[in-house]
Amino acid sequence: MSLEDERKNALRNYFTGLQASIVGALEEAGQAAFLTDTWERAEGGGGISRLIEGGELFERAGVLFSDVRGSTLPPSATARRPELAGRPWEAMGVSMVLHPRNPYIPTTHMNVRAFVAGDVFWFGGGMDLTPYYPFEEDARHFHQVCADALAPHGAEWYVRYKAWCDEYFFLKHRNETRGVGGVFFDDLNEPGFDASFAITRAVGDAFLAAYLPIVERRRGLAYGERERAFQAYRRGRYVEFNLVYDRGTLFGLQSGGRTESILMSMPPGAAWRYDYHPEAGSAEAGLAEFLVPREWV
Image (cartoon, rainbow, N blue to C red):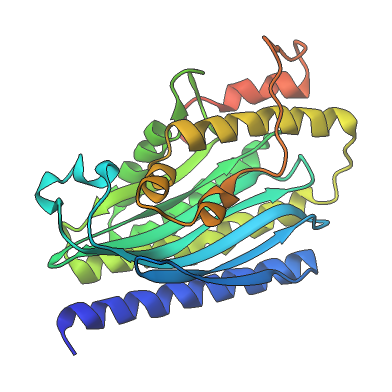
């Protein structure tokens, strides 16, 4: 077996195992089973989509594994690496978005992935938190877990990836961040394959510890139509980011990816209101204080 094949097998085993462990924990938390949708891609590869819709805890949740291949890279990839134009490629990873029903539980996103084109490889990923009614202790907890997960690999990684997350998940046309951030990285290969893979695993393995304690703290909070309406309004921002800025969404659509999987990240419902401004001093107005980059650790 070639070194390239050994690496791909190690990646595939990790990503499928990560998907299974996260789904198992979420099923236990929500006391509801995820559906399984196994699919194949005509050009090469396929994936396993695990999802739930209409659940009591998660209104929509998707934990997706994909391993797709192609003969020619799309423009979103070759624009940054023109030397790879025309090369066959393979991309695999786990991508997930959880949209809870209770507006006091934040939406969250996590992704870890690897890209291989011959002797060229890179890793990417991250996780971030998008609250509707923010609690400072939740944001601090989420960031502390991220920092602790990356610390064994070097103190600089959390600092670098936290700043990258703040910059990446920024809606320029709204002049606000999507949420309270987390960590984000891409094009990681400079420490070498093994070290880059280890950093990527550190992020993926930390997700449940970062998010589930927040779910448990907030799931019992009572809410009504007002909170649900504000949640739908803020979910509109999530849609705007994914369709305008998100590189993963653009890569998937441009590379002929599976639309159902790519758009699984969208909330089950969203709303837009013309020139809406929350009432001064309200809990809804307080969210604005959290939609700017700040230090949490």
